[in-house]
Length: 178
Image (tube, rainbow, N blue to C red; front, side, top):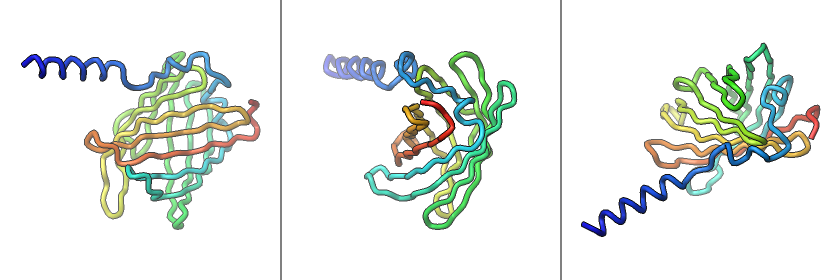
């Protein structure tokens, strides 16, 4: 019984200590100004690796961003290495100094974003096409602004609590200052 109690306490402590928080990046530079960065056209290149580290997909994205007050609309055009194409339109709302919400056609409910310094963390569920099937998956999505007009994006994708893969993207915007 004491051994079981010790295991439970240890797991509770570890769970409370795990996971990055956007607040950790409050002083990190260059700052990520989401609306400024994505207004206009942005290019991105990405990969999807399965949970074993196998490269499954490669793609390029052209993003057209439009700012209307506290709303950012991102019209994303995907071209995959195998020739498949896709489109996603995000509508992102500024919800205060450090919070955003977002919706898109394949996102379930509302994505919640927290931003500090050079980092933004998005969390959302999505219906993801996998072959002929559609899987409900969860994204823990981190964007980090870098010098030279670059954002590095890494998202962990889970299903039923198990990691199924990782998406890595690099965004490039020549017009944005470092």
